[in-house]
Amino acid sequence: MTNYRRNRVMGGTYFFTVNLYDRTSRLLIDEIDRFRAAVRYARHNHPFRIDAWVVLPEHMHAVWTLPTGDADFATRWSLIKATFSRSIPKRETVSVSRAGKEERGIWQRRYWEHTIRDEEDFRRCVDYVHINPLKHDWVKRVADWPFSTFHQHVRQGSYPPDWGTDTDVKGDFGERQ
Image 1 (cartoon, rainbow, N blue to C red):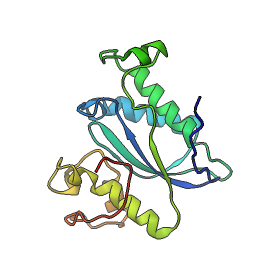
Image 2: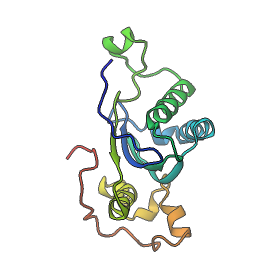
Image 3: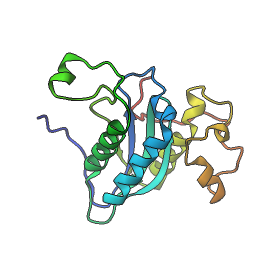
Image 4: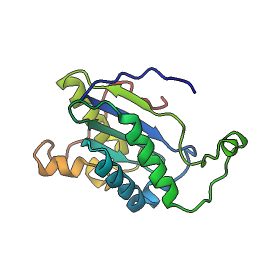
């Protein structure tokens, strides 16, 4: 098995981009309750703080902070993906290579991870998470996308309700350009 280079920081904060295998799918929002249940299950077994999260039809972005002394985000993602996959009926087409490994055809095998370096980096990543539905033309206003922690951030006073009219958020966040 390939050992990918990942920057593991105990108690670190990370930005993630995770994609479905079929980038035309709406599975994540069509099955949002099952996805949320998978996240709750993973957090119950391997706690982490959700700093920001947005779920789009075929991909998602998240910012997590792990507990002190813990850098194992890979187990958490594996648990979320596996729990969600087991919860939905098998309808997807499976490639020969995936079938040989008894894999479902739901998720891209890998994900993009970035270790948050400082407060400015954290702010940029959280902003990127929340602006993403607007960036992909799913909504005209960030506040109109229901599958986002943006609404919690508004309630906490981190953003005004009308935030997100300027989509000029800079950075390489693991998405296709």
